[in-house]
Length: 292
Image 1 (cartoon, rainbow, N blue to C red):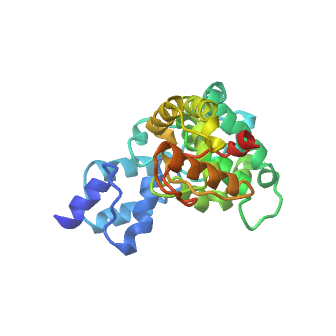
Image 2 (spheres, rainbow, N blue to C red; image 1 turned 90 degrees about the vertical axis):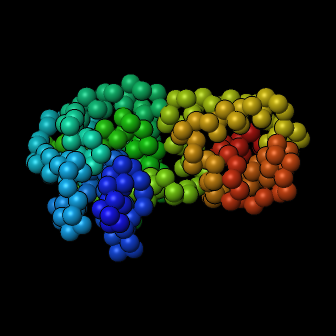
């Protein structure tokens, strides 16, 4: 019961793994909801070892077959390639990937995803143009994290290349895969700047953040936390895509301003002692622009 029950629970979006030695395999399976990088043969072997049968195994077998399916693509999608091959572990096997042209159009038409796509094309330009790098530039990594936080961005990650140029571009961005995968895990704490990008990629969260920055100016200056400010904070915290803002850490050249805002919020809005930059309160990368 132990092993099999845990495996079935994992495919029901539970995040507990069997044991330390299998964490990597099971984590990859979970992350394949966003990226299609998983070697499905490896996971199928694991399922067989643990005696798991039924829907999880069937889905993975279907995905493995569909890895060889090719779809046409619009030329711009050459830059929005999948980091992995295949289809998501959870339910996507029943819905073959749309063409990259359609996926791009849907993303571009959606306010949040369209902005994230533009940021990605700009932030990853050096990688996409083939400059030799042995690391993923931070600006590229951050823009990829934001793009793949949206449903449309996830769809872009599953579209298939049909030419060598696209395949070459995929290989170039592979260097960013590990960091982006880790950042997209629910339990991963990211910088407040990245958390803000994720929020801005979602229309509802972006609007809530906009109101928060408007109504909390007095708090930014360390003066007072008004009822409107507190209300905007509560609304922002209720947004699904604000989750990583709740425990983000301050980093970069604006870390001092970031920390000051977190401390002001803790003191003025929650009547708590001054906290450090790892506090559990929402912070925006643009606080510095409000303070200056």
